[in-house]
Image (cartoon, rainbow, N blue to C red; front, side, top):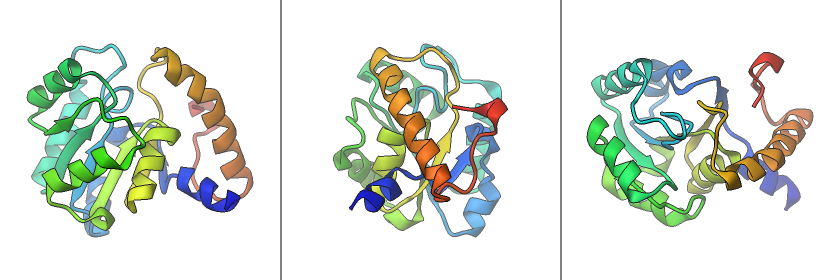
Length: 181
């Protein structure tokens, strides 16, 4: 059981940023939908705009035919603003890693879990939720060092989990020391 719990916390891939995710490779592997976290994945925690490189990357995803949805624990007003700005449907106040928001996203996307990629910056919300769904999970480095108070508390436990996954050989790629979580 302990090993299964660790497997549920293990991302399939680790990247420095969402823009470092190779969309063409995902498409070739048969994925057709992406579920994103918002804060510290696409934008900084308190950011009011989307970085240009992220906007270009999202446009490229759309051009390649990816269906996309934002699933965020953030408040309705903030998530709705970015949903409208990006033209991507969103589920606010998701309470990740609960399954319900991920299942809602699958319904919105009309997608099968095994054809979905879940991208986020947190092991205990994004990776755990995506793995429980049966999707391909990608952990990215947080965009901003500033975070919500409870997220800061979870980061310590997250670092321990990532260290353990790496030590057991379960985590194939990891942030270099320079890019550490």
